[in-house]
Length: 400
Image (cartoon, rainbow, N blue to C red; front, side):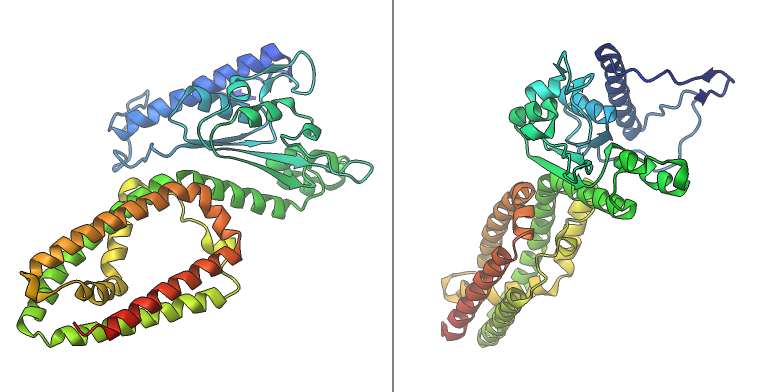
């Protein structure tokens, strides 16, 4: 029941699971979703969408990053998320929390799958199903497999072109994804069929799992774009370091040629330090901890770029990196030292930008693979340590 400001009261209609009702309800919710996205876009440009023209708080213009929009829902609400994503490309990722993707009962007849089930999506989408305990003690898992009992999930999975995941919340029930998992335990014996309503999973553990997996999924879904922005920020920081190195270290080498040897030795020591740090990281046993490796929460484009830039500028290791590597390739006998620094810096920035941007684009697909496999992480740490060690030996023994 809902009461409007005018005093008009709208009462809830009786539950209706017929295909006609599901179709009507889904169409209305998809339209509402797209209307909200339209209003948010207008708000972000400084337009006041308030029907009564009341003043809005200051600072809203440009505050929203509508380039990263995710949507998730439960039951019929998740059908809305899938259908809205199919029709509106402004939604970048979605999650289905134990809901069908067909009009009416997806296990019954007639079977009327939605467009998202028939055609799939080209963007990330995850399924999260329940798995209540049956009378025989077995789990009735809701997934895309034939035994999952939901034909719409099976059809969606076969047609989905974008990145996808199918997760199961063991010992949960359909309403474990709602506020009922918190409310029902407080009602005690007033709800005798508690297990049928919210399953036997601990409500606190259920909530923690849902929060963790939803956050991780949307972080990974937005990761490639954030990774590219971070790569641009780091490249901007490298440009500043290149300029500083060209004016500072270049002048030092021109005025005091013997300083080249000092810088070379210091660079070799720093490379040894990096090599030791890499091997120590490989020896640790907690690198695969998902809590440590999870991506940061979603940030706006300007914040991602700005944070990467400031982190790069404030990191003394980057400065030491320039001092360690660039002198290997600068030769006063070959011409203007400052010009050599700028050329090397430009090449280094281009190479770094291509590598960092590629890593950002691949992060969504490879991030969870690396984080979940400590052996891969240890191998990468050992490889880094070996490379740093070899460069240290080369720099220390180079008498140029």
